[in-house]
Image (cartoon, rainbow, N blue to C red; front, side):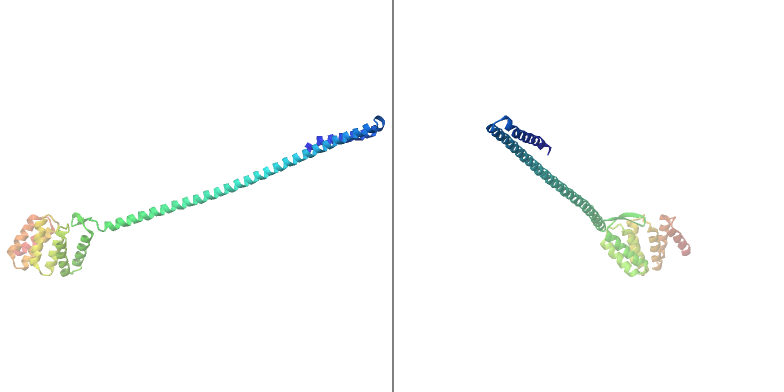
Length: 265
């Protein structure tokens, strides 16, 4: 609007001049000159109008172009905002996927750890274990340990016949077992309890010869003497008791041997 003010001013000035020229033409010019002046003014007015029209068109074109550019800029801004929103959504989705992946990895690691622990536990059931029996430590297979303890449990329940058979089977199955000295001792006791003194003496003497320092050797000697006394082998029993006292003087078995010797005199 401001840009049209010079053209409007020029148009008004020309119109005034045309009026003035028309008024003064009668007195100053003849008719021909007046007509030429009027035509000239009219031409100049038309030129001004055309110039104004051209200017208005240019302004309109510029305005339209500015409007189009503004609209395009708005569309570009909207597109950019949409792209940013999409990017934010994608980032949030990726963040969620990463968090889920981290949870999945953590869960997998926990399950793997549990599986490894379970596998180790299962393998451990088949691996030799350190056991301590009658003051002696040694390695024993789980099955070996289970068989020995099951057979000993029979003896302690008073099932001497089955425990004796169980110890015989055990010694045949595990000839190099660390349980062997103890198994011989309990086997001898089971046989003594079932009146099989001959077999009991054999197994007690195997214990003494194979492991003379075993904790049950004094008791084994004392039971051998009992078997000999029951077999009316007084001489053999006396000798066994004397050997017991000489070899293990500070034991309860030695004290019992002394008592029996005193009663044999």
